[in-house]
Length: 430
Image (cartoon, rainbow, N blue to C red; front, side, top):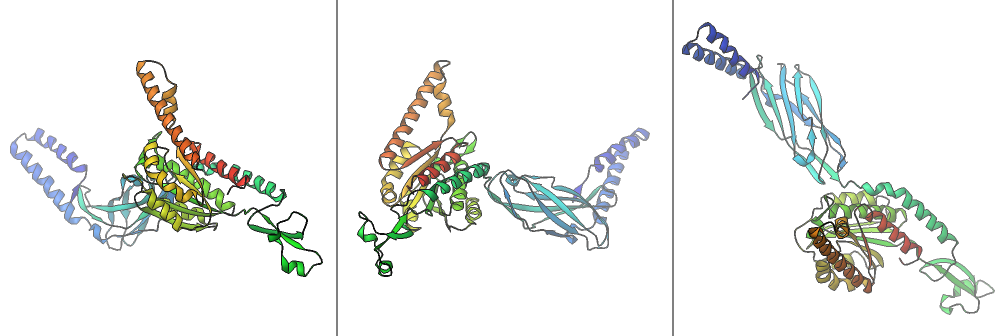
């Protein structure tokens, strides 16, 4: 049962009756009359359970973008239904305009649309649909709730995709230079030519030489299509917020731009995410649909308040394949977690792979280090300088182990990481 705003108005009309006959019995009789009208209105209201409510299938949406969910409400009964329907969702689904007025003649149906603006990644689900059917006097009505299944899968926003065209142009320019460079040692067969003094005798093609008057050797070129393994840290350090954005979300943005560029370059892209255990594992390969699969794998990832188990993560990375690869570790450049957790596990990766560590840098450290306005600012600047020095020392330590470090703020990390990838590719270091 539910009442409407008309009930207080009807009760206020009782003031006129009290003016005409100002007695206590008048007030009680008026209250009794209103109560009878409300009960009668409830009894005469159609049952909301008789309405058929069906939700149309939902697709996917990017975090921060808007989408719509649609309900088809049908009235199979013989009475007109007037009331209100509320389509309730999880708060993070960002449902707006989810209260709809109903006016359904018998045998009619209506399409109700609710706007969703999700603020978090993952599956955002509908909670319940509440229907309130009013009586003929519109004083009260019947109300019931039911579960109408519905969910929208919210994907990472991938805001750095605006940089993809410029990076693809650099990639095409790089491929153009690679097509005219001098052939040399490598792993991909290129062509056959006559033997000249100084050639490695191991490159002689004896079968081709048997069919020719001259000795023929094989020529090779550096392998162009390689493997890229992206390892995403979801431990407690990824939960830190930089400019009010979680480090994990910024690292995802950089990973998506790198994956999009690498897949366009023909490289096989694999993905691994975890902390004390593996949370996501994806062998996308060199397929063109690598990026959509990677975006879908990232949708449910959230930071875990636990230390990263790098020995387990490196074992999982090795398990994805022993082919030499570019391994990109997306983890904060924090001295303590790296020196006590990552460094002991690095030799396994560095021995067979090219390793790059990409970190989201907090620009507030540089701003604090530059301020000297008062005594408090000077102490803050000294603390910031100490943190920056520790980070630089950790980066230098990683460099001695053969690990490249890309440390940039959230806005510049995707571009810096992809530029480093293109530089490695141009120098033939992949």
